Length: 111
Image 1 (cartoon, rainbow, N blue to C red):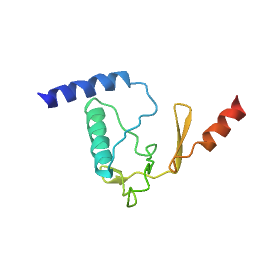
Image 2: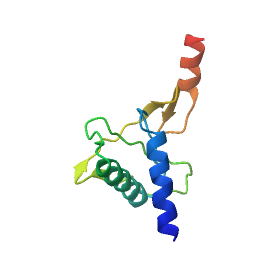
Image 3: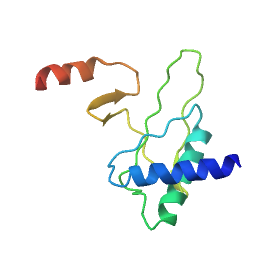
Image 4: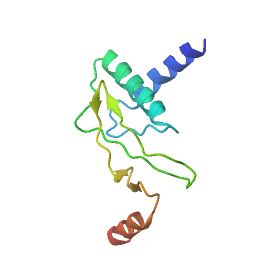
């Protein structure tokens, strides 16, 4: 029952995201991100779409000093996804460090 609701929800989201350039998947663990990424890939490709391996990248944010370890690899069907230190999403600059100075400076310059 829960799986059916999840599948239906993913299908609804996919049709809403049909023309989206960027999608953000968030999870507290590398394994969770890999699972979500594989689910997206499987669902998209099952509908005849293709998740671009060459345009996909990931950002690891540490929101707490207590969070230990270094981010592991993220992959789509064994293809390693490159890790970046920052990316732009919906007009905002998201940085690995969690800092917002670069985003604020950019907004001031274009404003």
